[in-house]
Image 1 (cartoon, rainbow, N blue to C red):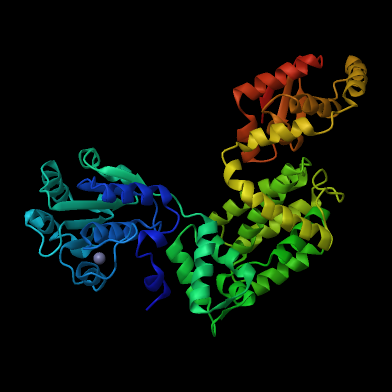
Image 2 (spheres, helix red, strand yellow; image 1 turned 180 degrees about the horizontal axis):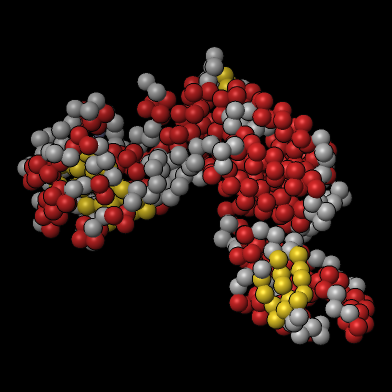
Length: 481
Ligand SMILES: [Zn+2]
């Protein structure tokens, strides 16, 4: 028996992380207020089918205990052995059902054999044919008292409104990572499997909120009643954090030897894209930490911005290694790009510190998720030191302006001015990475790439830049090239 079959929740006590649904359904059963038709909605593997089965068992159970089916009476037992004809499970996504699904639904009108209720669990209900939907609707309009339907779907927008309006709807949420980890720990304990602590995080990270995926991965990784970190790295194609750290540091320092590392990567890794995908998320995490500290590392933004752009280029390329090679080479030669003195903590101490902060941060992540990143930037810009030199520069700049139209100097002031406008912190960063040109009375901004081009080229931004230029005594029309 697979671990998932063994450990899939069989009663509400073991149903993972769907408290609201558990409570509502339990109360309805206890107070005898169940309805005849439910619809469960949310992504795969969030416990929809388990909940449906527990519910079906419980309403039919001869002596339910402690808010759960007893798992011992003849109903519970014959259901677990797949012998109970009164609980009918249909997978609408499977082709084998297509022909007879309508007949089966039409037979719902007949009384149950042994159980109190005849219960239909229809998974992926949105895949039903029109004929089947009509048969279902007909029954839902006047359901016999012995009948209950539990419809489940991952795509609720495809379920006809006429059906939805006759169902009580439950939206399942993604199972949180903390719960998945707890459940894996429980299985490890039950099965006496020795698991290295940091393994859990990697499994959880790769399971996309799915308990089933997590348990399957967990099972695959067991070797002689043990799961070792090194096996995980091998099997899940996970890049060591240490390697990413080292690579990123070299990028920040513009260390030419990074080309050797890159070549080694190509030799070691069959899939170089996977490495750079991990690097994107690793860099994002670092950037997030630098934001939270109030010391935004612009170089990380630059790396992240460029890397994701180059990453998407690999789609249409005959050689993806070449794309990344070009990216690295460009970073190495770029003059204005990366300075060696980055605010990124380096070495072992730095790495531990980052890990600690990362853990702290994960706890807070859920609450923080809804805050727009731009807002976060604003807050931290506010905390940044005021630019004391601003005034001095302005005076100096006015002097220059009287006899010279050199925009390369004034651009710093323009950027400082924009930086102080609420919600325009990003704009100032994009401007910083752009180049400029003045022809006649037109001030051309030449963004670094398509992404920043699209971000800067918004009417509101152009007006703002024009205004700020005016404040600086420049009467230019602003155009984005
Ligand atoms: Zn029972």
